[in-house]
Amino acid sequence: MSNNNDKPGLIRRIWQWWWRPSRLALGTLLIIGFVSGVIFWGGFNTGMEKANTEEFCISCHEMRENVYEEYMDTIHYTNRSGVRATCPDCHVPHEFVPKMVRKIKASKELYGKALGIIDTPQKFEEHRLAMAQNEWRRMKDNNSQECRNCHNFDYMDFTAQKSVAAKMHDQAIVDGKTCIDCHKGIAHKLPDMRNVEPGF
Image 1 (cartoon, rainbow, N blue to C red):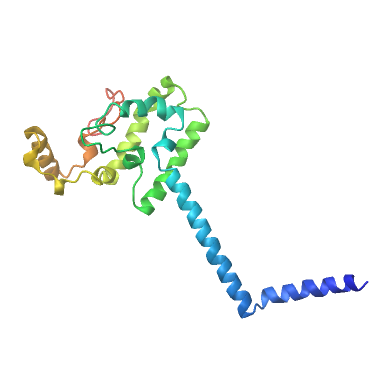
Image 2 (image 1 turned 180 degrees about the horizontal axis):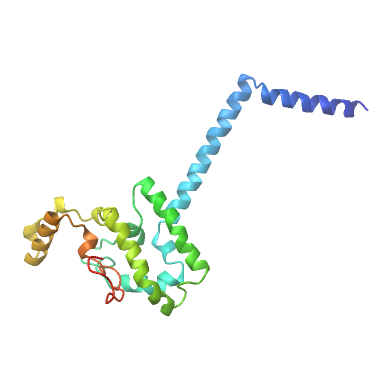
């Protein structure tokens, strides 16, 4: 009988402790909150880094069997210096906020994968132009930031470049152009551009 009488009292005491916490309870809550925050941030950051690897990018056959195969034949994959630009180097911003925006927008790509919109080479080719234009637009809007992480007009020695390249880069500076204006198809096969309006 006494056990039943003690239950409401115990619940009342816990309830009162919760709404009128002591310094010990507040400290406990702060410590739990801090530890939970560290664990959440560590897990979140680890997940983001895992999703920013070449292995993750080519884990679906649509990328592995199409654009990755093309990329392997380019200078960004293998070159005399051994410096490689991987998928996230070119397609994911390094800065935190732009990276988060890009990741959110990439959820549309997961939707496309789930519905099988580009799951065959034929379907991929049908959508190649639209996918390329989306990426070119993104790069144009951010002044080809991912390219500029490695290539920057300010640090180029035009005298060491071929004369045509030096002339084109010099003119690009004058015209306010960005990398993607001239370097479409640098790492992937260009889509059929016959019906594309000039300037894209």
